[in-house]
Length: 161
Image (cartoon, rainbow, N blue to C red):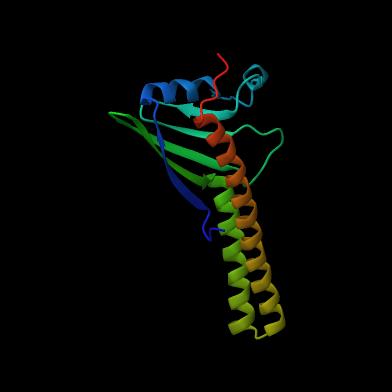
C-alpha cells in the first residue's frame, strides 16, 4: 500500500503509438455532466481526453467515488512499438479533502497539546487525523488496483472489431 495518493507504472506494447492512441480514443469519451446525451455508456470504459502525446482519463463509474484515480499517461514511440508511462493520482478535489481535514485535525492536536493541555482530546484528534488518512489511502489504492485492471485489459487489446 502506498503512503501517498500516487502510483506509477511503465508498460511496453508491441503496437505502435498511433494504434494505442486510436484504441484508447475508441473507449474514451469526453463527458459533459450537464448534457445527458454525452453520458451514454455503450462501449465507453473511460472518461477523459486522449491527445497526440498522451491521455488524461478515469474509469467510468455508475456512482460518485471520491477516491477514483486520475490516470495520466504519456506514450513514446519506439521502433518496435511504444512505451506507456502511467501515473495514477487523486483528483484535485479529493486531494484537497484529505489535506484539509488532515491539517485541521493536526492543528487541533497541537492546540490541545500545547495551548490548552488536554492530552485526551489531543490523542483523539491525532487518531482521527491518522484514521482519515489511512482510510483515504486504503480506498485510493483499492481504486488504483481496479482502474489498473481495466487499463491492463484494454492494453492487452482484445479488440472486438
